[in-house]
Image (cartoon, rainbow, N blue to C red):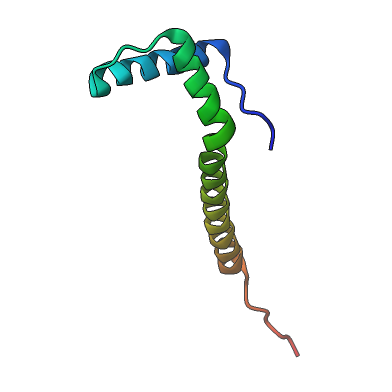
Length: 84
């Protein structure tokens, strides 16, 4: 799997969210570097679970759309009139 790389602004926002979570939920202060290491760990080792679920969700959505498309085409069919 390709490495997950976040744009600089998104990575900074994610690090800020991690730090805020530690502060709000765990009553602990975490520095920017440990928060970045934690983010890198999740992206590298845990991110595949979320990525794969996203792929399964996208596949299911596409399958539903293709079924709807097939039905729409079927509804456009016309009966053949035999002229004899």
